[in-house]
Structures are given as C-alpha cells and as structure tokens.
Image 1 (cartoon, rainbow, N blue to C red):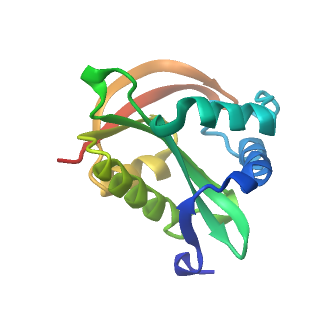
Image 2: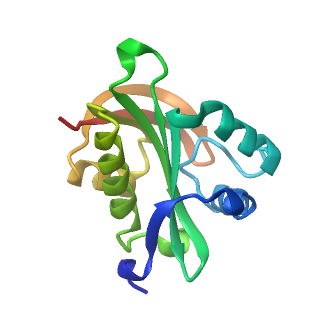
Image 3: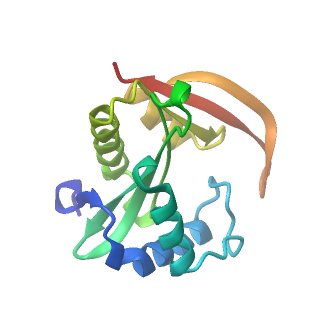
Length: 169
C-alpha cells in the first residue's frame, strides 16, 4: 500500500458516522492520544452541531483509501481577533497506516489550507513518548516551544506534553 493511493480531502457531511467510527477505532488502538477508548460519547448529531456552530473556524481533513477513512486532521482557527493568525491542529492515523506518509500529506494539506486563511502559525501538542510523531513534526519544520512535565498518566507511566509550532509566513 502506498500513500499515493490515499486521497486527502475535506470531510463530507455524509461521512460523519464513518468519521466517528474511525475516531473510536483509533482511540481504541492508540496510546498517544489524550482521549482513551470509550471516553468520548459524541453522537453524529452532536458532531454535526459542533461543525455548524464553529463553521469557518474549524476544518477536518480525512485520508481515504478505497472509500474507507484511515486518518484525519482537525484544524481549529483562533476565535479572537488578536489570535486569528493561529491555527491549532490534532491528527490521528490508524496504526495499520502509519509510516506510509499519510501524516506528512495531512500536515502539508493543513498548512496549505491555513495559509489560504492567512494563518501565520500552526501549533499542536504531542505526548513526549510519541517519538514517531515528534520526528515527523520536526522533519516538517515544527519547533519545540514548551513542555508540561508529567502532565499525562499513560498506561506505561507518566508522560510529558510537548508544545510545538511552525511559522507559516
């Protein structure tokens, strides 16, 4: 399987149920997400309402292989005028599809979209033990900006949260 067979595009309204299923499956297999299996209880109606209420300030990109969602990246643009040049992202890819360049493609698409919205920077948080994600972010030019020590209680012990960002202009 190659990353070129994977399409990166905005989430369609009709895919909300599939998106929730993907998120639930990723949360059940991933150790390096803030949400653990079973903690999130959002319905399709709840997610649709959030999308309508946040409108232009949020965007979800999905990675699709043969019609099946395999990853996603959420972008949230700052609400307040003084912070409007900032975009915050969260990303997750199925375990089975990591290491194929999907994260790179999602990030580059999000950066292009953020630039089109005149964002000057993209920021994110990542668990300190998530070495693969940190390596990806560093390779794409994200810089370390801060650290919350022992902020997470993971199954294998305490972990840090790293703050990273990339200037887009």
